[in-house]
Length: 508
Image (cartoon, rainbow, N blue to C red; front, top):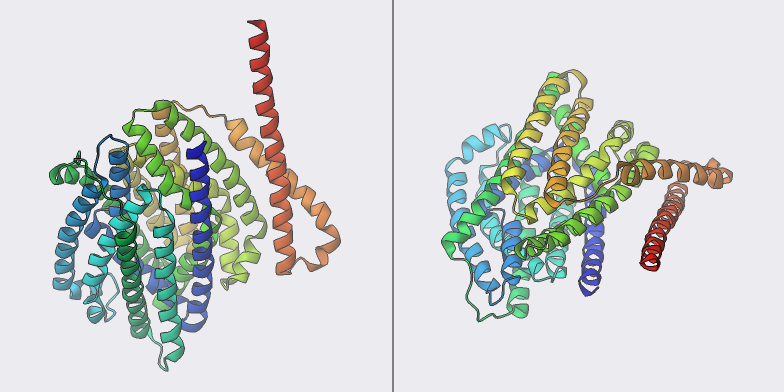
């Protein structure tokens, strides 16, 4: 009971923080689109993809690695989690220094190929600082997550975003000339300053809240590396394929007849408006993912198969119930959401079009967390390789013909393929029970039944259907009715199980 309440508490804290971050990110994207143009979002996305790839290589996927290995160390008697953290920091400093040197030597070629010739060589000189502090900061976040002090990394993320946003808004409003070179300068400056603020906060909190251990660490540095490199390989593969996919989309959009600026603008709308809108409801799942990795790693280290089975069943069922409702809301109000966020009719149509695949997108968050928590890195890497092979193939074939709808098609094919594979792997490994009718068909049926009920209740106010307040009230009523129905059905199931036990006991 204590563990369950702590999971709920940590999830609530992380969800609140993540909700703030996602809401603020949407507002920031709207500001950037209106002040600097939609192409600025495209530049920001490409820069983020590049730094994400460089960051994964330079920190060895440190958050996941340290969180999992420290959690396992905690689960062993007489362990020393602090020593595991020091191993992680040592490896990150070695990797980030090497990657920084390579980036500085190849800065000209990177600008020419990754940023389409934009003058980013001056900005790239700041990358080593970002990589080193980011790598050590990722280790500290993993440490706090494993120690169940989840508020610390959450606050560091909020602080980093707040500082980065302040720099972007301040520099943009103060500028007289706004072009692509200025946009690159603003973005890299905001990343450097935000990263520095987050690192200082994490270092101070570690000094204040660290727990000293006198036990002997079960991992040597060499053994830590042997565990870290498979995790690093999976992270690098994913980041590389994601970056390649992002870089290909503007190129393929130009083959569809768009100019370079229009292609970058369309890509910016998709990445800055459509994707954040689709992922916005998943805030709770994203918050839970780190906790799921930690809990699964502890259960796996203790060889507690029953705990893993229970986690798999409850997490998949709950995620699908939630994801079905989120998909229904996005299908119903996709056009309104796209217009509200400044993406216009095109963004609205795309949100509505992609919404049916949202359950597959959301289930990936929790399935991947459990798979990594159980140490199945090889499967994770191979599955990502196959998934991105499908996604990139669809982009190359369909985007030149159908534009952004080709990108949407790539999300359909890759997510259905990749997450069916993840689910089958978890189902076989954990021996979990799963009912298609209970977890998929009934939630879909109840979602649309409750929507029909809300339509009847809201009919007198239909004249205000274009009003934001009307939409908000509609969604809240719909959520309340859907939750009540799902709770009632769940109560009936629990009551039936209790009665079954009573009958059996009486018979015995």
